[in-house]
Image (tube, rainbow, N blue to C red; front, side, top):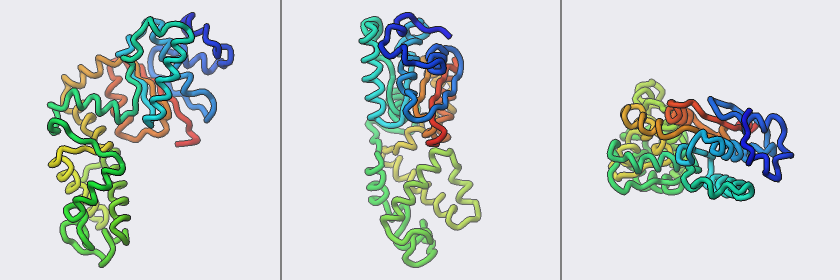
Length: 284
């Protein structure tokens, strides 16, 4: 356990228990931290990041801190800056170079830089939850169809995919399935050929949705991640360049990650394996 002298000057330092100190002082290799609510998980991540910088293990630009809402990311940066000011090290580093964000935002940053290596055009638009629903509504006939399953295959009159009894529910349900297919890296072709009527229809609808999405140079949050994942998978030079620029990744609320996010994080930190994830198994 190696803790920089400046960290010990924090007014809250005496309140830290041995387990928290072990996390803060662990600076090399992977680390999984499981703790319940109200145990100071986020504060410990912040101190671990500061400690890593103070020990000279990395520059701010080489460190990524992720959480799962924009509000939480803002609060994390605010608390980190406050801690740095308290121990008077805020002038020692350019903390604005620390990448503190959601995983979606991190993926968007990478896509903006390497867009030319993807199928996206200039000035692509990212759909949030609401605009994704509106997009499916706008292209409803192409993706789902009126009173019919996709591609004009009728199932049960008045019920979309033989499951949802209103257009609104069909849109909301399809959106959830589309995101799950993307986030779990499910092959839509396997769904189409599954022999299951519903899964086959969802697979075809997903493919139609993707076509509409990319034809209009748009991406949803799930596709932000899948595009970066495919970029890392299919462009070794890009993957190497990105991974070599990141020495540490720290993830708060890790229990909220999905499959593609886990795979992304492992690829991003493949050069050093310096990844620390903090979660609450009671909330998973």
